[in-house]
Picture 1 (cartoon, rainbow, N blue to C red):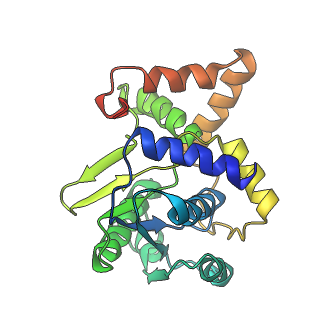
Picture 2: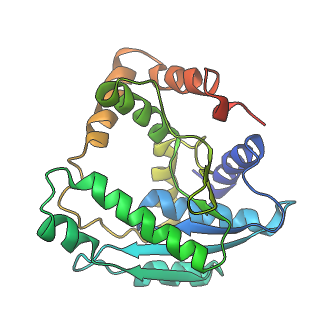
Amino acid sequence: MKLQKLLSLTRRAVDDYKMIEEGDKIAVGLSGGKDSLAMLYALAELRRFYPNKFEIVAIAVHLGFDGFDLSKIEALCKELNVPMTIVETQIAQVVFETRKETNPCSLCAKMRKGAFNEKAKELGCNKSAYAHHRDDVVETMLMSMLYESRFHTFSPVTYLDRMDLTLIRPLIYVNEADIIGFKNAYQLPIVKNPCPMDGYSKREYAKELVKQLSEETKGAKDHIFRAITEGPFEAWNKK
């Protein structure tokens, strides 16, 4: 996928759900993976010509795993003229050594988001951006149905009242396969996730399930996505 297509899909999501307003300062969450780096590229480029002028800053939460080197991502941020802050934490030690969690992903995500949001506020941001893509929307729906007995997924825009931050998800129209293509075309400096649970989560199961459904029923993923965007969720009604 070329940058032009990524920008087109990102801008459509931003416009449809009024994600960016004049004067916004947006904290872009960087995990080191392909999704967050693609979002960084998209927002850095969108910043140049979008009618509502906005700023972006990049924030990466270091969980404390050895060997998690973010130097190449720092170089990319410098190239894109995006200030980057690394938040040093001991989340890995707390989750795996102190607490010895049997379900570590939930606690890790909660602590990681907390550290990210606190730094975003400290830097004067009024919005934060997560790199959830179209596949994530569908997979989250399936996970909610299978594990929580409810028809639910995240929203394009969410106000976090406790932090007074508005969370936006600019990549909701972008397929994961296209992000992989973008990563390859632009040689994104991916940093491998050192977490021992990487690849063994419930989301990985949901991802494989969506793949199987798509192989058995043509357009299954698109049908589920349309059921979400055109269904009963008020937050998914285009503004």
